[in-house]
Image (cartoon, rainbow, N blue to C red; front, side, top):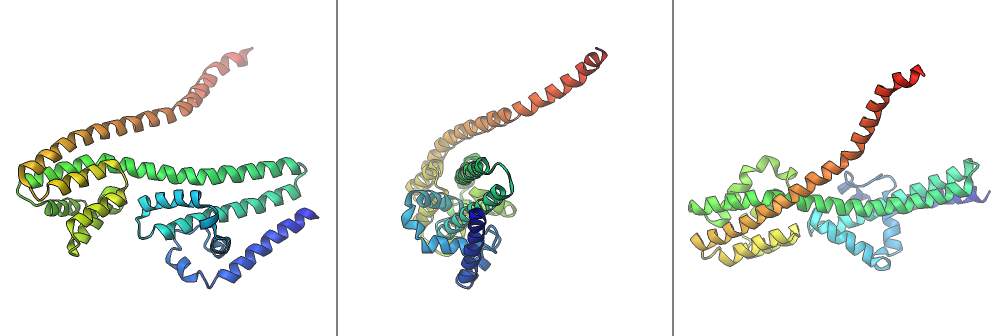
Length: 288
């Protein structure tokens, strides 16, 4: 009877939260509906975030998510996407809590299922945070892999008499069809658009460094800002030295990715070997 009351309470609280906050967050949900997990339940999750003031109650967790969203989504939209990600966590935890109590109610092994359910909620919460870290790492690796080629293009164009701004624009224009598939060129495109809007070059470079959030881009922007006014041989020499270190970094990242891919193949190979071995020895076993 107690479990039925708990299940009913979860359903009622969720529905009340949805109905009460539906109009409040309607515009926000409509704007980000493709990014929100289960938009129908989103008003409840957003209401929990604001009413419980989670930003003050869980500053470390939210700040960690926010810093990653700055890297993944940019500084302008990072606040919105942080809230969306928190809502995703709350929605999934609420659903798992509901189904855990339902499973406990309908099964014979109630206590053990309850423990498993709570453990699953913890695992899913940790997985969501780790998944965000994984996406940040993949983005950084992608930028590191693409950056040496971009720097080489800048060197060639500057050697040919082009300005740094013009070289960046031409490099981005060559990748116009792949901008949304490339984290580096997406950010470079933003930088080029700002330069076209007459934003100062120093400000554009600082913003590019902030949005990419990796040391290699920071070194590139610093090198360019220190030498772009001098131009010519000094800038090309500095970029050539930077290019060597960037290619070394790219080789390191590529090697690590290759090792990770190899390690992921170990278990499938073992299973395939076991299956082949079973097929080979089964006729011999069947004879006996």
